[in-house]
Length: 338
Image (cartoon, helix red, strand yellow):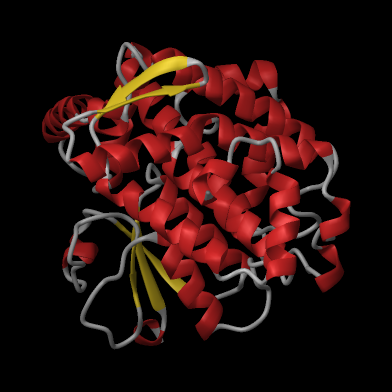
């Protein structure tokens, strides 16, 4: 039986693993979860790049990575309980918000985990033990130290440094407020059923509000509703969605528009600054975000993200594009598609 099931190789501390698993649970796609780094995982096909999660289709000799394309492949191969809105305009907005969750919210996730002493201590103590719960204590302690040192050394790659820290922390607090406001109107971002963007937000928030102590304390004081929402998003197989549960394109509320204003406030200028640095082959992104200076290494993958967003925008029919432009008007996202 197990050979006929999809396998996810992931880890509880991987936001993208949690994202993909939650989608598959919600869509009732039979699968097996394999802990990354475990002996069982080492016996499975390997991906070209060692990232989590890894999805292995029955009979495949290769593990696939990258949660967003995998979610779209699952849409093509399994029917029912879609996480893509039927309306093409909403589907594009869903892609944009999912990309923000995957590529911007990982900055506060990584920042809070590896730039604060209490969070470093907890992560170093717990994360390595997930690979093998019965590992000898001395080996687990050594693995925790080594893992923490490596991740702290990668802060600059993600964009966390003394210059960017205030921008990252302010953006996290605003996201809590904005998502809380939208969840007061509907149980999910685009209505009464979850979209891919919900799972993208959920993935990062499994760490920010459900594991790491510093951002969790902020969320508990500021938006406890989001902590409860993350708990509910974990397992939605019992939800019975209907087509009418999607928000209508004529019913976009100010609270929903405000989420895209946040995307335009922080993520859009980063994407444009990163693309400029890549085009110039510069060693550093140096731009302005939220009225403050931003510096980090260029990130080639996020250059591809901008390209994919522009391609999706170009594929919209003129009427759908007009709806999208109406929602994004004044948000700061317009420059992405100029």
